[in-house]
Every structure is written in C-alpha cells, then in structure tokens.
View 1 (cartoon, rainbow, N blue to C red):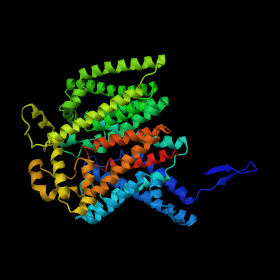
View 2: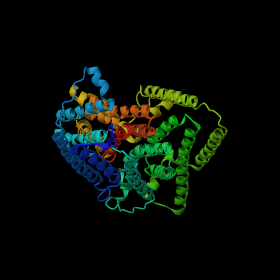
View 3: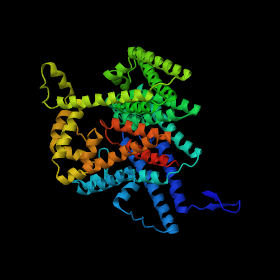
View 4: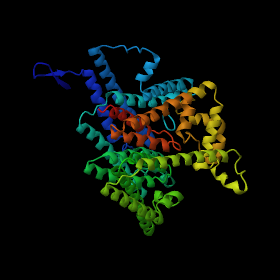
Length: 544
C-alpha cells in the first residue's frame, strides 16, 4: 500500500493495490523465506533416501506456491482484466526491452520442452524418476520460481530484508555445523545409521554427497564473503566472520578439492572490487584472514585428532589428500600468516598516512597475468592432448600428466570423453535440443554398459561437468540458454554493483558456482537454491 499527497490539500490519497497482486507478493515472500529457512536443513531417514525426500519436499512446497500463484493471477485478472502485451515497434526494440537473462530463460524453456518431446525416453525425461531426478517437470518448477521471484518478490523495508537474511544465515549455519561435527564422527542426528561403514566418507551434512556439498559451499561462502565486504553493521560482520571460518573448515571437511575452485573464484571477485581504496583492501585482507584462521584451526584439530587416535571416516579420508594437506600444513600456514600480517601492516600504514596507492594498476596487472597464465595453460593442455596417451617422450614427457586419460580428475576423463562421443552420434535435432533431461545415463548405457560395469562396477548417470551435462541433455540451445541466464546475471550485477554494492554477492556467488560446475553436476540439493538466488538477485536489482 503506497500513498501520495493530493494537490490543494494535506489529505493523503491512498493508491490501492489489487488483491490479486497482494496475494502474489505475499505468497512469493513467504515461499522464499520458508525455502531459505528449511530447505538446506531438511532431511528424512538420514542419507538413505536424501535425494528422494529432498526433492519431494521441494515439489510439495513449490506446487503449493504454484497453486496460490494461480489463484492470485485469477483474482488479479478478474479485478483488472487480461491485458494484451504491448506490441513492440520492431524486433530490435523488443530485444532492448527484454533483459538478456529473461531471454535466455525463454530459450532454456523451449529447449527443455523440445528435448523432452524429442527424447527416446519421454516419460523419464519429463518425470525424472531415476538417478538425480532432475526431469523437465522439476526444471520448469525452478524456472517458475525464478520468474515469480523476479516479478513479485518485494522487500520494501529493512525488517523483510533482515528476515530473509537471517533465514539464509541460520539454516546454512546448521548445515555447516553438522558437517563440521560429522568430520569428526559426531553424528548428532544419526544420519549415517542406514549406511554401511564404507559409505560414511561419501556423505556429509544435510546436503548429501561430499562433492555436492562442496559445490553448495561454492555458492554460499562467496555470497557471505560479499555480505561481509559490503556490510557496515558490526554485529552482522561478527556473524559473517564466524560463519565464514566455520564454513571454510567444513569445505575442507567435504574431502573434495572442487570447493577450492568456487571459493577461489569468490576471492578473486572480492579482490577485484577491493582494488579501489584502502578500506576495500582492508576488508579483503580480513576475508583472507578468515581463510587463514580456518586453515590454522584445521591443522590444529588434525594434529590433535592424530594424537588422540581419531578414526572418523571423513577425517581418515582427508589425511589421504595431497593438495589440501599441503595447503593446511604448518609450514604453509606460518608462511601465509607472515605474509598476511605484512599486508595488514602495509595497508594499515597507507590508511593512516592517507597515502595514495595504485590499486587499479595492481588489479590490472594481476588479472592480465592471470588471463595470460590461463591462455598459456589452455594452449599447453591442448598441445598435450594432440598425441595419444603416454606418447610424449624425453623432455616433453611431463605433458603426459596433462592428458585427459580415463583416470583424469577422479575418472572424470572417462565420462567426459565418452559423453562427447555419444553426443556426436546423436541425430542433428538431438544435437540441437538434446537427448532429454535426466536421460544422460540412458544415453551412456547404449554403448558403455558393459565397459562401465567392468571398470567401475557401476553406471555413470551424469557428466560431472555442467556444460557437458546440459549439452547432452538439452542440446546446444539448452546449454546456451542455461549458461546465458547465469552469465547474464553476472554481467547485470557487475554493472549495477557501483549503485547497489549488495549485488557483488551476485557476481561472487554465481562465478563461484560456475567455477565448481566445471567438475560437478546440477543436483536436487543445489540447483533449486541457484534459481532461487537468481530470482532474489532480480529483486535486488530493482532496489525493492
């Protein structure tokens, strides 16, 4: 309800909002709040049916939201009539009026529908009853939530914004706490009770599989990093700091290296925005300090656990990891601490003396160097794979280590190569629109069932790479639409971040998610949160 002052008198004339629009706005806010508060922590019967129960909970809430939204729209149309959309003066004018993310969302919807109709397994492609259970029906629900949040989510006052913020922080703090405890074998909710002991190191917290949990943190942690970076509220900053230290500790607890990609991308984003002033760099160094503190605590507890003879499955698995044990080794922790203190002293002195520093030049040099290094790495990687496995000899034998062999990336090389081979065998229309959501496993089974069973005693049901996953299941059109939504949101948030710093969370969160998506899959535990986050970002963009 809004108001304005009429001319010629001091009385306020109320501008009435239709009942239908009120229903849509209240139901959207209630849905977002309840999802943020409960979805991350929801589980039933431990890990044994976590995919089925998590998805059932999501569908139940979202279908209820859909029903209320339909009622709201009907009431709105009764009150206001169905208005025909304005005809654009030209196609070019229409493209200018439609945001690139919404255009990509429309393209993705078309690809989802056509990939289902063209699939050899239409029922499975739509309903998604097996494996990851991400069929067209669920994907369309994700897009429905995204659109509703973008259009009807309102946060007109601080209390509403605070409610969503604390719901997000509270639920994910529980996720992190459970993961931290389970790393040491403290299973307060008895989630492992229905598993055999050899499966304990495969699951953690209420997000499920260790790789999925790592991917989830690649979205959540960069977002909270951005919250800390832009916040001036002391109590909130303390909460964010504790959250980040515990969250990074839990990232190590997932015993998956993939989180380093996403959280690393988040730090690069914050470094970019920090390179503008002393205050920005001071906040960035504080974020680095939280990472250092999490490393120190991990090394301290690992040393204590070893002395106490700890035998928790995740702890024992972590001890076998070379990279993460190197990062948390006492020598690296001490060296990193010294460097961090020196950086704090330097920036603190510059702030105190109010001495100008060429931060923009530093940013340019750092990111140009990273870009050059990335291009060189890609070129070397391509060259290494121009020969057969192990064929490089002599001085160039080191290139054999960069080849995508079947064992590359914990056997990701095997599934990447074979899924692309299977994709090229598809008819042209399925190359364009895909084989059908949730039908990746069916496609792989055509040629590789016996081979996979012999080598791995199981079947690959996804690509362990989102680009390959959507390319195979929704085709070129679907992959362009899906990644267009994400990349378009990043570009929009980056452009508007100067006016609304909270949008830095959008850049950091989405790029963190995309970084880990190179080695992980869309999941029931994670993808709903991604589309919900995208919808909330659209609301923030409008400064609601």
